[in-house]
Length: 166
Ligand code: HEC
Image: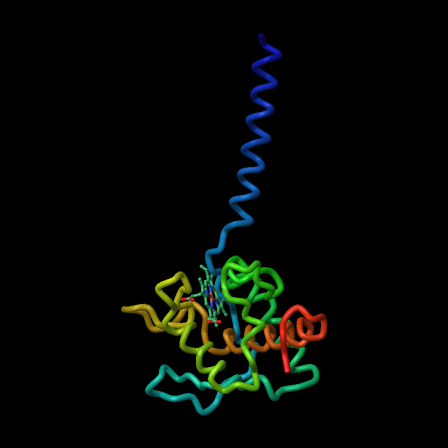
């Protein structure tokens, strides 16, 4: 009898353990990010909360670009990966962000649009300023860093034939 109770307890606690793991893995709440080390963005439109509509970090190179990509990678992992997939590779349900084409001006505009305003189908407006607040969850420097990281993933994905490119 006692043994049986113990066995049940062990079974139960390991189930709880697994449940705990699944929960923490599935936790997609955005974590925010500290973008203070990223370069300032000039020339934003004051009527549009200071946004620029083309990735200002795309033309950087060398060590600076590496820093931007590195920051973008961690900000992506903490704020986007839960829905858009690890390493920017979508599991197929939500859009694969590597398909956004940096050559296409409209794709950058679309990126800004979705991040500022979200979508009724489940994209949170992480770059929008919530009513009664003065700052978004993720600022423009963070979001363009994420985009720069995703563009690097796109190059790899095209090379490996995972997505189509020119
Ligand atoms: C809670 C889940 C969730 C999170 C977190 C999330 N997204 Fe999304 N995102 C979605 C869904 C769902 C869509 C599709 C919306 C639609 O089609 O209406 C989407 C769409 C988009 C689109 C439009 C893509 C296209 O091809 O139309 C962009 C860009 C985007 N997300 C960027 C991001 C970035 C960058 C982050 C992190 C900062 C992020 N998302 C975090 C769920 C999420």
